[in-house]
Structure formats: structure tokens, C-alpha cells
Length: 346
Ligand SMILES: [Zn+2]
Image (cartoon, rainbow, N blue to C red; front, side, top):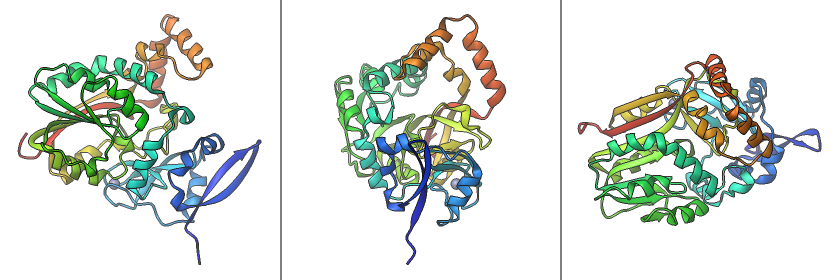
């Protein structure tokens, strides 16, 4: 009998070793111990050898099996689908329910991801530029759902609009509890697929959440069920081409992040799920990445905080870094605001 296993490379006490884990352990590898020990594969050759030991990867959105290898991080390959252009991790978790459970239990401290206070501070900065555009989009709405509301700052802003009733969904317990302390509205911890509200929504927002959705097609079906016929689905999301380089991001947070939009993926999804793209604003990622407010925000690393502060106070340092980033990465990565509406109701 042949076991369904995958190879994981570990560095421990300076030595490389390789172990085999059952495929069912997807998601479990994001424990603190494994995050410390696992190391990016870093080359296509390593990924190719792993691929020979399991069935061919299949795009989780369109099912296409042809792909281009992009890079590897924490023992996972990032692949670009030849049809819908989605960039997805391989191996990809097979059980959506399991992934919801993994997210609900995330310990942000051990994952080295921003804790609640820092996440909240970062979102205050992010919404300084996004809120005016979002407010314009939700102006006539009476009922709004923020999916993956995190620490709740968008809901906090939206709840101040007269006549707008809001609901948030956040699967991580720690962030959901934090959001309840910030936004005066209902914050639920239920997967969207299981959510049965009494009334549909005019607006559903997903701000930097797409990478976490474990089953994108089920998700779109659920959204169509929850959205009024003339409602809006609003994404803030990264979009990138398959020529993206790994160093375009400091940390891609793979396998916490399962997928990223390719340049034509949202158009593909809209068509498949009977929706129309009514707004598509692409801003070069460099504009967001080198915003001074972001560099003033403290992270976990004392050294990085020191370097960031030094750069912010040095004249022309940030514009120079932004220019170098643009030279290296060109038009391969964007931060986008995308608005969809059910087809025929645009
Ligand atoms: Zn695809």
C-alpha cells in the first residue's frame, strides 16, 4: 500500500533533514514549532521533485492542471494557473471545515503576525485612504456585512453612517472579541457557508481576506445567496502577474495565505458566478508599501523597527526605496479595490 505523503524539509540545530508527513496534516504545519523549523524550498527543482511524489496539482478555482511554478515558501510551492491565472499554494488544503478551524485557533503571537492592537492601528492607517472610496460605494446601503472583519475598524466607521445596520464575521476568536470592543454591532464567528441571516445585504465587504478563503467557488455561491439582487460585493485585494518575484513581499504568509488573484482571475470568477465588475481600481503596490504612515508603525522586531524609523526620518530614503522597488518589480503587483454586482443589475 502506498501512503499519501508529502516531503517536508526541516532545519534543526543547523542540519537539514527531510521527513514525510501524511497529507491530512495540512494546516497543522502552521504551528509555532514547525514555522521555526521549516524553511522555504527556494528553488523550482525542489518543488518539482516533491510534485513527483503526489498527484498533479489542480487549480482550486477552475480545476485546470497546467501551471507555472512561481516560487516556494515554508515548504509550499506557489503555482500560477494557466487558465484563470490564480496563484495558489501546493499542497492546497482539501478540507474547508478544517481550514476554518485552523483560522479560529490561530495564535497570532506564535505566528509572528500582528497582534490585535497593532492590527487595529495598521487598519486605521489603511482606511485613511480607502474609507472615502468605500463610503461612496456604501452611501445608499441600509445593511452591510464585513467578512473577515479582523479587529473591526471598518465596522466602527460604517456604524457611524446614518441608517446603515452592520454585521461582522470574524473566525479568529481573539480578533472577533477585540472587534466587539470597537464596533457597536453584531460580530459573528460563523463560516459564511453556514450563515443564515433573516435579511439579505446591500453590501458585502472583503478587505484583504481573499487569500484566506479555503473554497473560493463555495464562497462566491454563499455571497450570491446573501447579497440583494442589486447589492455590491467589494474587495480590497492584491493582484499580481505570474512573473512576480518572491522578494516583492517580505513574507507571503504561506501557508496561512492559500491563494492570490492573478491579473484576470477576478474577471473569470465574476463570469462564472454571474456577476459584473463595476469598479476596478488598480494601484501599484509600491504606492501602498512605501507610504510613510506604514513605516512609522512598529512591528515585532526591534531591529526592523529601528531600521524603519531610521528610513522614515532620512530625507528621500522612502521615495528612493520606492523607485528601486518599481524598477525591480515593475507592474507585477497591485493593490486593488474591486466592486462586483450581480449580473443584470449593474
Ligand atoms: Zn485556474
